Length: 211
Image (cartoon, rainbow, N blue to C red; front, side):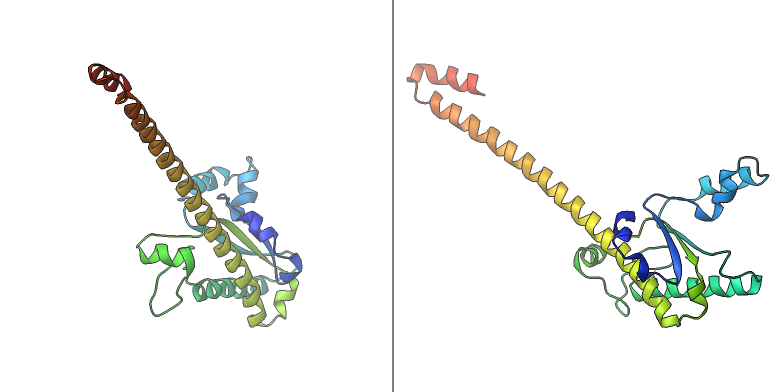
């Protein structure tokens, strides 16, 4: 997942800074978790450990240089959060990163759509931090959504690529096993064919040895 995000040119994200990791990291709690002397460190350690490592962990922060007033920071955080949530929903993903199969809404295609129709559960995975930057103040909401949409599209592409790779790998193993089984069968049949070329008195003993 993180490798896929790196393929997107950084200049495409002017309204926020992106941190994406394929593993589960509590970016928001990092300052408290890093400082073992902090009085709240044990509390947040337990909070992180108790959280299920499933779906997509994501949250929005505001760069300290983007705004100083609390009310402005709250507005920026809410604006970026709303843009990301709408981008998720428009692509058939809920706020936890779970792909939804809704006949009235977005319909997934390809291998993702096939798996959802079969009743399998799919979800984006990992942790994501969106940090609001100065341009978010004046940017049009449609432009903000365009940028957050690219993030969601890339995560979906990465999920599909991972599933495809796993499927191809399983099929290759299955073909290898079948090929090995057929090879064993062919070998035994060849041995039995040779055994029946002996005279009648030797056939029973030869077939027994071949088995």
